[in-house]
Image 1 (cartoon, rainbow, N blue to C red):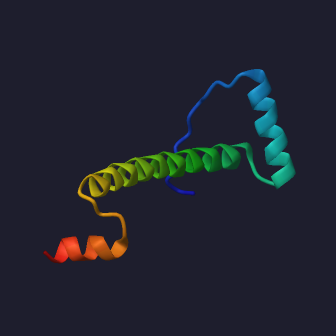
Image 2 (cartoon, helix red, strand yellow):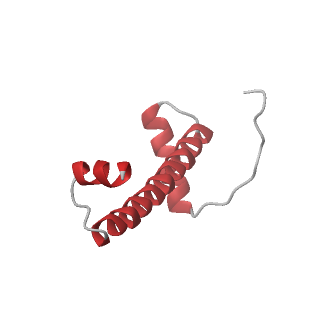
Length: 78
């Protein structure tokens, strides 16, 4: 990993122990476990944003009386 950046982080003792146990159980380094956790957190954040957008546009469609995909297609063609 040629573009790796070293950082020092602090974790509560119980969380550090859990991370170390997870690394051992999964055959990963502690850095690998932290990287996976950060990637997963980013994915979850994007999913929450997507769900928020879906909810917004669903409300907008319902307000216009668009309840099915067919109705949406007709509305978009109009």
